[in-house]
Length: 571
Ligand code: ADP
Ligand code: MG
Image 1 (cartoon, rainbow, N blue to C red):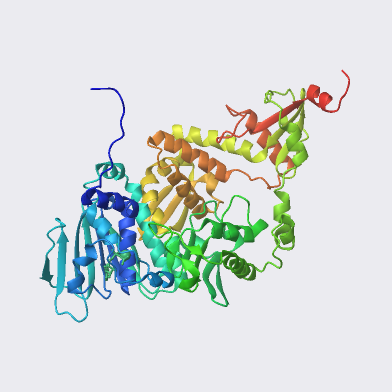
Image 2 (cartoon, rainbow, N blue to C red):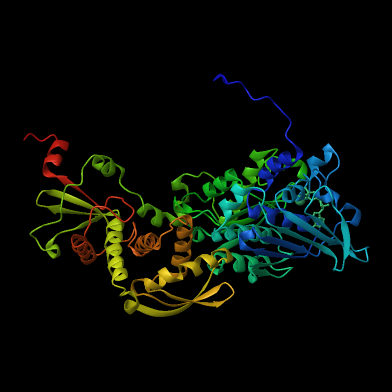
């Protein structure tokens, strides 16, 4: 044997391997199976779609519909690659009005699972079933069933061990499936959807439902009450749905639904343009909520740009974007389309002015180090504390002056308070009854259920009420005056983004930091002198007064020597 490396020779892949490779693109995740099957039901004009999931979709996914069904003689070919009833010639590609068109989904699913399809058309007396366990030997047999199609997918990824292992034990992955159904249900309010996960009904919306009712069920009342209806039509462009009032913007961009001719798509540019249109009506870090369908002639878009059909390309994107802006400007009542911060002064000027920090001060402080310890001989009560821009507190110290970030400081104080309560399990005693109902977006229900214990230890008593509504029985005293609903929803989303936090202690610390942040006074809040003094006094008592729980600095000192240098004073 020599050590010389020679290239492997090129060979054709065997058909089995080809199909595995191809399926990998279309069926990325158990939720992709659900997406493809539901799209097929919608393409078949179903008015009721039932989805059942067992064990994050790996052991079984079943989608049943009352649509047009598949002709008996097409049942077997529906499982073949590139077989579709939705397109015949290349020219059809320019006028696609179905969700599917590639003829790849059932084929791909069948190459990574055991699939069976039962279907009955209106003109057939019986239904028929095809079971694909051995692709080379497909047979159909009659079955009794009503009109429609039932697709059952078992043992997903049985022949892709890596993928199967990757998705096992990840119960939060069901959320992805719920998100798919949520999107489909929002895009098709006339269609009824029912979804069961491990035999438990997790989502149920009736057919012919009013979109606003559907939104409030699927996304929760707190989102739906802050939405404005929108209906904008010009030439061949029709944008319809709901967009949030500025105050309905959220810290996450999760609740942004864009449908193009009823197809859920992700379109970063559209999201960006919508956010820009809100401009300074919303805070920089928040995101508007919207559920919008864009109706546009199929000839003006290209839907064939993504293997999972999640994106579309607009032939004339500039005019699409412009119309989206116009539609939003109209509904938000913005009078001009320049997005500079000052242009919307008329509406929200005072709020946003207050949030601006002083750039000169910030830059001159950039290089200062955190050296000062609040150990003054004076009583905090006697100190003059100045609040600047409703953001920072400034006061004199024996060594120079100190600047405190009011939000970060309060956060630090609360964090340590909570932590102590948590460790000593005192939170229960300090909580107060509120008896509030909390309706959650369906997708957050399981997450809340799994956080109930940690929240309980922190003094939140929350019970299941019905469907996706929970009863908040009591909350820690500190939260009594807060918008508890908003707090908990944001908390859950934050927690979810950190779903990797395995150990419960870590998750609890994260929870505590989060809650501290939410309860703390904000940048922009005016503080009375007494409040300023309280804050500074409490800060001196914390263990670590230099950074907030997220690691941002809480206080900065400028010594007299540094001031001297800045002013070029001679020593
Ligand atoms: P595509 O949707 O791109 O055509 P699929 O592999 O998803 O490809 O489906 C293949 C064909 O099977 C479809 O074109 C359609 O004719 C038929 N089909 C699949 N699911 C259903 C369903 N639920 N109801 C009616 N027909 C279906
Ligand atoms: Mg399809």
